[in-house]
Length: 403
Image (cartoon, rainbow, N blue to C red; front, side, top):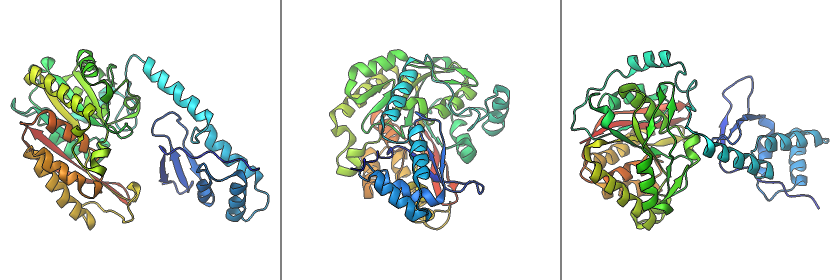
């Protein structure tokens, strides 16, 4: 009897190749359990459907004969399977071993290194400092500002918005007394969970200081809502970028409480509020207690993008920034932003729940967490933009400040 093929992992990134010399489907592992990048030739892409945990080797062979027009496809079949398996892209023991090894490696690391240095921003400190000085400049905000929201898109896609957010920070005086609570989107995190780490974030500027006492306090108060040493910190950019910009403004040894916010999926799809989950409610209460006790020593930084529209994100329509259907997206973004500025938490969440958040605001959970923990905060929009992330897809984001 023909053996059933393992299925492709659900948590892979699939994108069309942008290299005319190597057309096909690009497969990457966003979790970095594997650093392999595969390009599946166009003629073989349909054969990937056989890796669903239900089709057999015989099904794959038959599909390859149909796709290639060849009778002898044994070598093609073997190469396709081996390439996917060796890359850790199939749900096999090889992938599970790679995952366990990488998670253990991260847990044992003393620091969280700068994963995106050299790609999203310069790795050389002098080059980085020059670029940031030109693009961002210095903080020009007032002491009344208690929080900002900034993008976590690639800086090259959002310099104007990053600048608007980080120039709204209070001046550098007394920065050593500040604790920056960074609420980042957890793109790969578990629903209704918050990812914490005791590791300091390191960038080309140097090593930040993680407030481990506050991490431990949150863990003690809401253990079931928290993943400590959450592996998502190893691969997530939403906090790394904020630490980088904060270090530019205030120096490398900033004090940080890094919190990754997983999506509130149950609330979005089934109704009710995120805090109807008692574990999430305990986390909110613990964070609010810390905020009340620490007062103005805390400064909140939200690493958040807004809408994700286009073929890259599963939509049928092609999206063009600031045109066509993206004008309607801007109007809907504006309605949500208005509720955020007024601190209308529940009205904001009503808009998120509309059509199960078809705008795909990846920053919805950090925004809600902030409004829940800091209910008296009121804000203003400083800048809004839409970024053409690829020819068919757009991400929107904004810069905000709160008092």
